[in-house]
Length: 623
Image (cartoon, rainbow, N blue to C red):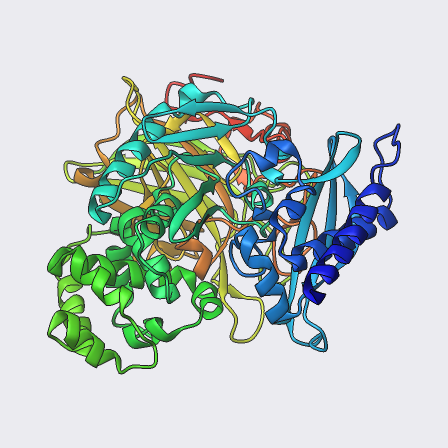
């Protein structure tokens, strides 16, 4: 009887507080005190466990969306509405408002979940946002997707529904969408699973927008999926690209009932079939082959026992190793054994014993066999000189001292970034019957720089994008580091510590070890390397090129390429017209009469508008 009366009293208080937010509001404004009253009432109702009472705080549109209460997800993944009472009772989390921000037709409550008496522990405090809209003469919670994508378009396939901003020309992405739809079918077959509903896929314009859609920090890709009574009831993928099978694989694997007990399995399985936002699945084998014998290598037993935070901090290594190892096990022993291994995995039990149970071989010996497999993989041969008889195919100079990005980029504060080290001066392409030779000239070539003792090394990196001409409807990719290339590219070559080559979906498929010293000639201030014609094709007069210089470091080089330009961060490129962020290029290859600063300034991350750049060619077409 006490419990019933207590719950009744709590609901009366809650409804009273709701009414305080339902006063006449001619200007549709809300004060911080109103927001505090609302959240106090809402959290009390969550603690009551009354599902119908909780729903009264939500907008009608969000209530009709599966996973309408996704906004709570930063605390412990997605939590179903029926679980909040027990979760808050057991954890004692309380919600505190930090500030209130106004959006386009909505408000954002910025706050945090905190545990009492644990203010010094960063893991016991979780920043989170709640979105409010004025509906039916009251302020109500709404899913961020419902307000941030309200004017977006949609494109539907047999298996997925794609959402994208109206600034995007969907015709430029049909082939990517088709390939992802085909990949979806392949991955479902591999997991022996089929969906009743279609996966929703949101194309974000930036990492910041990607995170906002699911109330997360900036990410290039995110997947959200949760269950009620072991049935998946919420499947959303968000990505900065239209082709990101990694996030879709997360949804497929979880929905098929594969538990994610450790990060090694959750990320490794997604990499094994879907690669990453910027890398193909095959790249995991390539990269792992490069590191199995050097100091960066992480033993498999260590990978399996790493907590999620440590795993993510070294994601440029951990993702590739786990993806490569898991794909090797699946290809060699089959998916059923992998499912068995994951389902019964127990971190407290000897890993060799668990491996013997499933694979009839110890984990140590499985690791040795995997390494033997990787060593058999052949990678393309790269050269570092241009033979005298090689034919010049393309040559173009770039104005000196224009390494200012959109007009006012600032070099990193470290004195080792000498004047001109980001200033592109010349780009040349040669060929013979076997190879293509590239030479990049900079005003001043430098050695890799460490911004602090023992820290990662940084270096100017050159991006070379190639369009082979005569498109003929083939897949081409247009986007790199906040820049949109009007022609699109067949291949992109990142020239930094080594060489990374990306395909026409924008994903790295080949990566080398560090051989910067082999490419670099400090006397001539040039970088020289060659690639097999068999790998990239034979350059012709009709080829078009984009060449740009930015900043990279060791982890970023093998993950996404260039480091973004920040407003003001010591040791990194900063400055620029930062109202809406900046493209990452400090200097790009353009004819002398073209305004580089104007091109790079024409960018707005909020509206999803990238800096549009024309590629250069031997014939000078387009300028």
